[in-house]
Amino acid sequence: MTLHALSPLDGRYANESAPLRDFFSEFACLRARARLELDFLSALSKTGLCPPPNISLDTFTDGDALKIQQYEKTTRHDVKAIEYFLRDKIPGDLRQWIHFGLTSDDINNIAQALALKESRDKVLLPALDNLLAALRGFAKKYRALPMLARTHGQPAVPTTLGKEIAVYLARLRKRRNEITNHKFEAKLTGAVGNFNALQSAAPQIDWISFSREFIQSLGLEPNLVTTQILPYDNWICYFQSIQLTNSLLTGYTQDIWRYISDGLLEQKIIEGEVGSSTMPQKVNPIDFENAEGNLGIANTLLAHYGQKLAVSRLQRDLSDSTVRRTFGAALGHTLLAWNNITRGMSRVDANEDKIRSELNEHWEVVSEGAQTILRAAGQSDAYESLKSRTRGRVLTEADFRSWVEAVDVDGKTRERLGELSPEKYIGLAVQITDSVVADGPTPPSQWHGEQETT
Image (cartoon, rainbow, N blue to C red; front, side, top):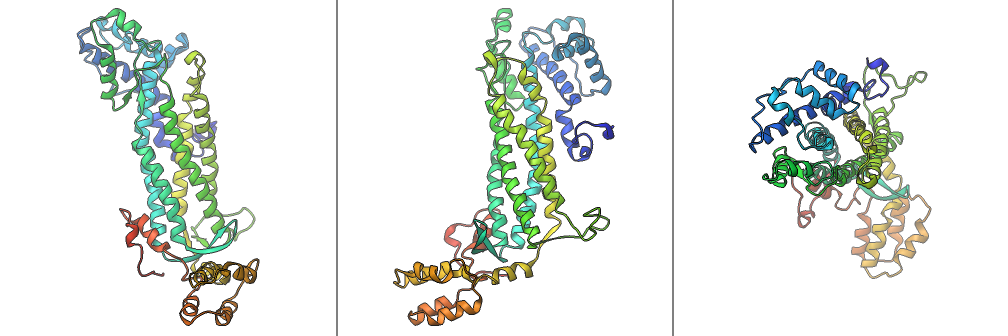
């Protein structure tokens, strides 16, 4: 029962994490390994060593899984328990061919590689695409809304709200492509990686080609140079891509939280929801806070995989086995975080009046443009001159206009200085944003044009 679950992924967050159960639950693990044993038997029959099995596990029930677990209570070996379970289901003349010449990890690593691949394709990528779509829509909506940027936390050159989101969108798309294009490795090479048993029993068969073709038939990349276990370097690279994605999103959730805290973003009021047990006025950014926490948990596990799975005593000990059983937990917390960010983005809008008001309180932020215009006009001390007037000060529009009238420049330069304002001084922010939200990037040569405003 979810009320008694030890992990919140199987309790409080059971519904959100449910899609991953079909790949990483104990039931899914038992089903995948049993089916792989039969797939191997079928491939073995094509070599002429044994008759076709003529059996499938299209239907695998809870009862089947419980029966395997009963065997494991005696064997204390998970794969041997599956072998005994299958022996009850196939003809007697095939029983000696179940798990023929294999080591346990030949089955386990393939099952987990398939779980990683299929969960990515069917669960994680759709969730990430939903998140990216939410960011893309938000960036497009506010592509031209000027806002005060900050560097070192201090008021800086203006940007647009859409551009700030577009930066994250561009970074995340690169990670998405990396995750999408990852090819998962698997191995079928025997007890120490040399095909010893298979080669001694049937030397007439090209076991290297057999292994390669079997792994490829499952949509995986064969690794033929292994020990008893698959070197996990390839899987670690995948986890590191997820980890970096989560790190980027941690920064994103913190930025959105800050925008909400500063009143630059407004949260939608959802009827029936409560923000505080005692303060009735509150609307909390709980989706982003929940996401940040789950990203941290996921990345702790993902980082451990990189540290642990790259190391194994004499290239084989069982300490990796229990770690590999937590893949669903790391990806479950990741999925939960991604979905929370997507939901959170559907509940926020820009407070345009607040954003514009804050920006127009800081006319000193156009001093970069002003000193650059002066330098272009031949004033080598322009930076130092404006530094003495603006550093550590907040300028009003009147302050800036007064300086423009008093500065010793020609008429054209004065006109260019007079055109500066915090709302207009956004450079190519709109064009850059458009290049990100478009289906294809806009060439930089086309970035110069009319600025649009909301």
